Image 1 (spheres, rainbow, N blue to C red):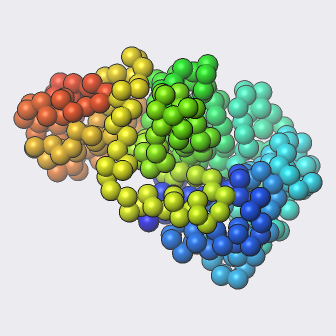
Image 2: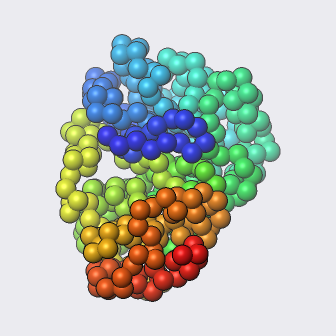
Image 3: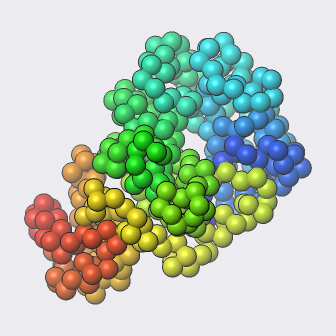
Length: 367
């Protein structure tokens, strides 16, 4: 398993986390087996926005037996209500308090790793969370040491930007996948290509980690009949696409059982060609062409440049990341080492003129 450090903390988070939205129907025994398998394979990050209450006591029981609470990170959602056994969304503060107490009791924990403002997709929802008492309650728990970090889940870039403006987030849970990033906004996702990419870059620049939901677009991308591109992608292509985005620390695919989890874990040992999502270059709309997505399909570079990483540090520096220049300076090979051979230009699925871009990047960093 690979781990990425939380920018605003010391936690090392597994790149593959676990979503619990659909696992509840499998029953307590299978849920416990799934969590045990996840822990044995190095998964340490769990999102608890479930379709029902079942995962909470099952996970709590597993942790009580294994004693692994200190090695596990939970996203607990302030606004997800499980009082009647099924999921419900609420903004009522008293209901939120009761639900969070129940979630903690069921998980057999006295602290929350990530306390999340839940499903904040509209400006008025964010305003209510910030001004209606929910954030104050979260801040009280953080001050008391009950909450370690504050996060928010959203599908709306403009609302996520407002939360970033407020300076309250250590983690943003956001929906990222090729369909949302490149298909027509009205059909699939909120926000255009540039707006979504700018959000990812801003998060990395400001040290706000991203945990990813909807990596497969609810399964749409895995079936040619439902894919907006008319062709199916694989789970591993989708996972690699997400993990290459700036700011992303972990992706949280939902699983139903151990067989699903075993399939997801195969990503760790899969060959690079199984993860190669360069086919997206044939799907992407015109406005996406000419933009590096850091897929590294141009590798290997004859001069040894990590073209994707060079582009990422450049884009992040432009976005205001004060550390990007330092990261770039520590690269063994920089844009100025480009020999203008055109190898990357000929291979780029998004038709980026990387040789010209290397020239621009070298000038920007003062080479």
